Length: 187
Image (cartoon, rainbow, N blue to C red; front, side):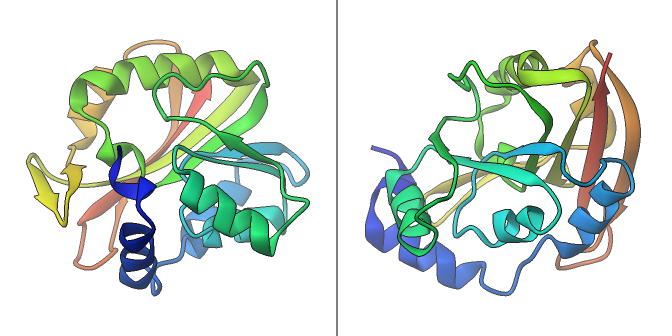
């Protein structure tokens, strides 16, 4: 059973992240991805980022937690939601973009190459990935959750070929340069 399979943990997490939004990240994405494009969000959590994405794009939300999916579905009964883990991504659908905001850092490092390879398979020709990560070179556990930090170079080495870097920049989530986002185009 995963951390987010328990309702108490989900409720605690929702409180912990209530002041975090991806509005700045999504504004950056809008510079690279036309309105109306199809976007898969990995790890919708409480769904705030999915709501923001839905203002511009045709969105599909996904999570590996039934609790998050059920909570979002209660508020948005017509939402397009998929039960997916961020590694195997078991769907036959394709998307113009796959987006996540501080989700992939929960995966063990050995799973990252497989995730990016599978994401590439789900992208349309020239499709984009946009993901954000904590910046650094450590791994820690906080309240039962794994957090893997990356440097830009380390992540690029792990991802390997099949993509061109469109944008890569550090930003402030809590402290200066504590995070970075990457936008990749499928080649």
